[in-house]
Image (cartoon, rainbow, N blue to C red; front, side, top):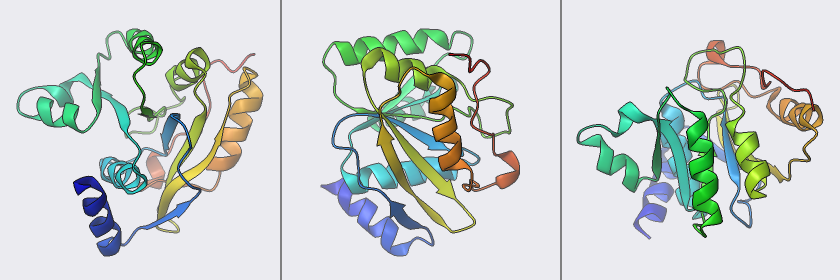
Length: 189
């Protein structure tokens, strides 16, 4: 209830407009892209709290040190050790298979700096758990943010990524110069 009130207040005062599609009707892997600013985190919380989505999100391990640790975990954070990022995929899959129900927010373009490729963990998690993917977005050119379509990945990586690229083609992120084109290092099926 408090989260919904905070979200309602945020959207009433924000320059940003919440738009797009409705929240998915079941837990999904929510892609947060383009991820170009720390403000993306605030927008993600405001979106999920508005829609009442119970989320978990992946964040670098250093965000969870000291006094921030309990707060970040309370907000749904799961620390990722960048020295062994592949381990987190297995941990998330295991949590879901154990019956934990949540939407998982992933920023596959990685850190807020422009990268050459997206990280493929979101794809592997969605395929291994059977969760659909929901395309979340931030677009500074229109000052809109929200959720796009939710769909099942087919396993045809190039076709799935073409669909994702088409959705994000006109989304700039808060800092367009740091936007990473949605593509995986290896898109061979």
